[in-house]
Image (tube, rainbow, N blue to C red; front, side, top):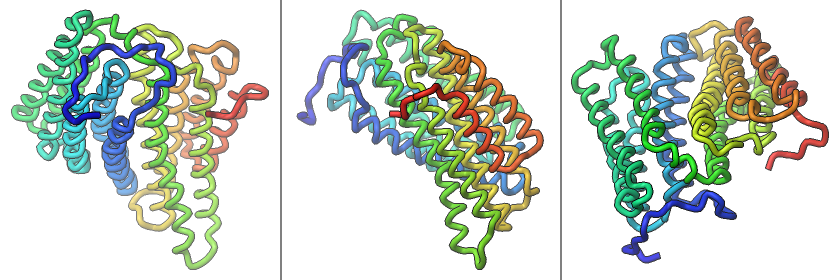
Length: 386
């Protein structure tokens, strides 16, 4: 491809065969994983220091910001990625902004002060607005909707900057106003044009969401790996460390298997309502798995005497995150599927995990519950995830 080559921005065929993630999209994911790792590590330390509940809202706020950048780019690319030079340059601008934002994630988590990352947030938004303006210029059929997207995100960017300049981060108004901005952000696709729900490629989006799920699950896997690593540093065989490490690993494996157990249920209907539930609902799936990684890492800190919190506090977050994951997976996937397993198993498992969180049962119990959920949810002769 010539570096100066430009192509018209036309909608991608939603029925295109063999549609897969591009190297540019995978490169974009690499930037996102840095930000996710930063906020997960920050929340891990907050749990270990006894501030987990206090910082839960901060974690959710920052995680949603990271996910929203990824989601905007992913859905746009699914519908309008023409992979020409200008598309790549604007995508790299968004990635550069995401990198700047990722550098300030820990500070934002601690203080909700966006000063470290405001430039990155503006750069990401400029790139996204310009991508939509290209669609408006090249595609008469979708021009109105594309202009609403561009205008909506531009206006909201002004609101974000105004929020930062006018309302101090320590003010009690900052968080509710910030949440209000996010709500308005998520209304933009609804207002822009319902017909745009037909431009995305189901298989491509299911793959992209699955890849981000694996990326986020990697944070939980890292926590399990760190627990095994602690065994090398122990001066004697520590049965509790071994048990916790195995439980964390089994839990991660079971969560992965459960998510990919039935891919046909993901984004099963090409409708705006189902697309919004599936697309937006996944933020809880991703956030829950990230929180699970933070809880497992804090559990290791407790066992290695590096935490300043009661031994059962990390268990609260591990069980609660597992409950949130299972419950949301039912909403975004199983609720669309026939059969009693799809209708019953995950809701029952959610209730059991909520009880486990209330009792602060250890990771071994969480792993057992999720594995039992996987077995009960699997159909006879269920094919392996692929």
